[in-house]
Amino acid sequence: MFIVCADLEGIFTPEIWINFSEITGIEELRLTTRDISDYNVLMKRRLAILEENNLKLDDIQAVIRKMEPIEGALAFLNWLRALVEVIIVSDTYVEFAGPLMEKLDRPTLFCNTLSVNGDGSITGYNLRQEDGKKKVALALKSLNYRVIAVGDSYNDITMLQAADHGILYRPPDNVKAEYDGFPVAYNYKELKERLLDIMKPG
Image (cartoon, rainbow, N blue to C red):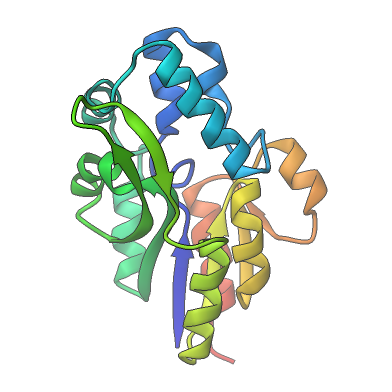
C-alpha cells in the first residue's frame, strides 16, 4: 500500500517567507531552505530580523491570509488523494498554515509550532522532532506503507532518502545538482506521470 509524503511550500503553495519579504521589502527574508541547508541557522536569522524590525505574528498572518495555492495545486491534490493517502510534511508552523490548508481542502498536515509572547512577538520555534520529515517516512515504512516522498529543498532530502521512492519537484539548480540521483518533475503533469509510474502494478 502506497502513501505519499509531500512538502507544502513550493509544491502546493508559494513560499510564505518570500511573500512576506516582498510585502516588507526585507530582502534577506527571501532566503529559504532552497538556499540554506541548515534549518536552525535559517530560522534563528529570521527571528532576529523580525525582532529588529518589530514585526509580529499578526503581520505574517495578514500576508498569509491573502496568499493562494499554486495554480493547479488543489486539483492535483484532489486527484492524488483519490488514489492514495497523502500527508503534507512541512517545516512551516501551525500558526501560519491554517488559511492555506483551508484553501487546499484541509489535507493532513504534520508541521511545527511557534512560541509567541502576549504582544504577538515570535520568540522561538518548536520542532515537532529533530529531522521530523525523515522520521515521518521511516515511521510510515514501519507500518508497512510504501512511501513516496516529494520535496524541493535541502530540508526535504532526508525524507526523500528515507522513503521507498523520492521525487524532486521543481528544485533549484543547486539542490538538483547535489542530489542528482532523484527523478525530477517540473509541473503537475510530470509529477502525475512520475507517481503513476511508481504505483503501477507489478
